[in-house]
Image (cartoon, rainbow, N blue to C red; front, side, top):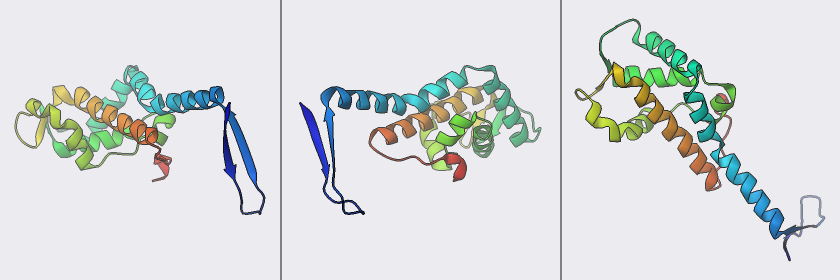
Length: 157
């Protein structure tokens, strides 16, 4: 048996009926489910690529402006993440908006024991910290889509 959806009146005054079988509904749900996992899966693949490490090093170098040292501020970490997002592959850039300060701090709250002191981070932990933020962001986008939210092209924000 199929499920029947009706739209009795459209803007043109005509009616439309759609009949879907359970198999078609299941296929649509599976396709939608795969699309939802797309951002996190794509991001995880990118994080394993050599270009991620190179782009992260470039972003950190630019935002730290050659300051050197073993500790960076929250602001430098946030700027590094924003710069890195601009260097992601186009597919990911469209899906991942640059996170704001509150999102970054929230994503990193479980990592606070790694802070040498309030407001700063060890440079040695930057890769892990950035990955935590990006994975949290991708998971948030996927979850938002899962509950029916529409995510716009982030490059146009």
